[in-house]
Image (cartoon, rainbow, N blue to C red; front, side, top):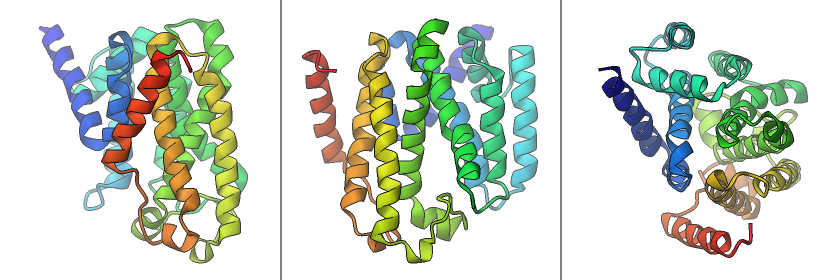
Length: 279
């Protein structure tokens, strides 16, 4: 029965989320059950594309990506895929009428990672972030608002800003891995060989502005999504605070993280504020 395959497909996306990101999967767990699986399905799709371009170094990545893209658009066209993650994702796309333009923009940015290693201008940088992060925030927003176009339009900018902030924080956290392991540098006009406190401050200030604008949207999210998104926001805000306090030389040579112990404390703090209607 197709229902069994759909259930297996959903389970695959949930497993991928939990295996690849304990922080994100924790935030998804506290979304309303009515939207939780669809966010797992979006993450499963995003993670699979990202792994092709970032991790499969001993395999023909361009061929794999071409095949993945072909399978993706066939899944969207036919309403089914034998790839369980794509099968689950197409179901979420159809259910929430997620714009194909968002999907195409995401795939465009992922394809750039196959060959592009340096973003020399601000526009190149912003275009990449739009496709790799902003549109993912917009896909999730379409799930959160349940097809309400008025709410989507009202919260669209904030969702994009939050997606940008999360991505830029990841860039800053992963400077060493991206630069040394993948020969990539995303921040324009920034010499990572000579990253100093002034350059780091400029990046942090930009992220803090994105977070502030993203937070304004969190306050207006439907109740089904607010707690989970707020928890993710607090996690990333805490990570940024740690990066801000870390000397630039250390950021270049280590991966800063939020400890599991601290994550538990952050979750308790978020739950307390949510229950007291403080968000």
